Image (cartoon, rainbow, N blue to C red; front, side):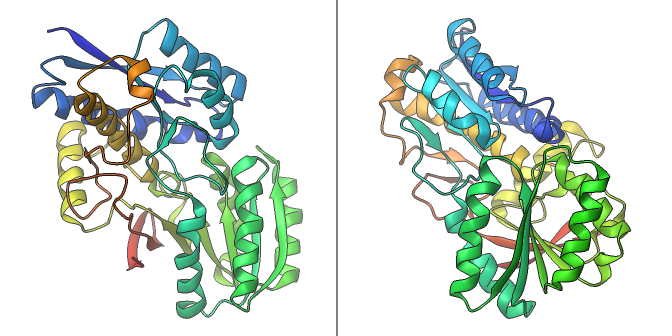
Length: 352
């Protein structure tokens, strides 16, 4: 059987490297399902995995290799926002660039296919929920020092003020900050006496911060709501460190939808109970591969130059996020709030 190549661009190192195992296995499951159903027009989908690293230049170089050396028909990318724009400028005119995670506000790059959605759409219902259910009015925001938090935190602050709340501080944490930085930041948070700490930490940066937050004794005093913290982070924390921790996202592994129950059953059957939990970012790579296959099938070509200019909003693809197993990019994504329960997230609200 001849093959259609699809690239998977995912960081094996850096802050987002903690998500790599679930991203790769979820993508493998997506490719296996496509091939079991006959492939793409009778051709096998060949998944080509490339380490995106964390530094933008290395990420862009890896994407270029997928296009020029591996001759992929599309690239599915779960990479940081610090790299997305550079990758788009390098390869998006030559190959479909399918970006899977949520991202900061602002106009998307041309020819980049965003199959998730922006924080502009996700954060408002989450804030409405914490205002109503947690009674939060005083907030401190903390996030990593890179593009996504630096764009999304000021936006979230404006939304808080528009709802009658106050922002008592916005803290920008250096990537791989030392414990001493956290200690000083936690004293500022303690002094500010917020009702809720809104957290914009990426990948493994959340692990060290939440550990230090718990060690400070603030876990029992200040509730946290995290954006971009998923089950992968929880499995790297002591269960006591997750006290009072909520999260808002478009997907949780514990969502009890028909599509997600089926996805989780297939995932655990394929990889076993010790496999990494496919949280938001892992599952996004499953649907990214499914989307790439749907695009190629719809256009009846694997030529990346032809696919770049194809209409992409109505491409049907499989995902665990929707209420039905198959949907397209015009389908409105759900927004969930979940509460940490030891090393798992229990969904406590579906907001839309």
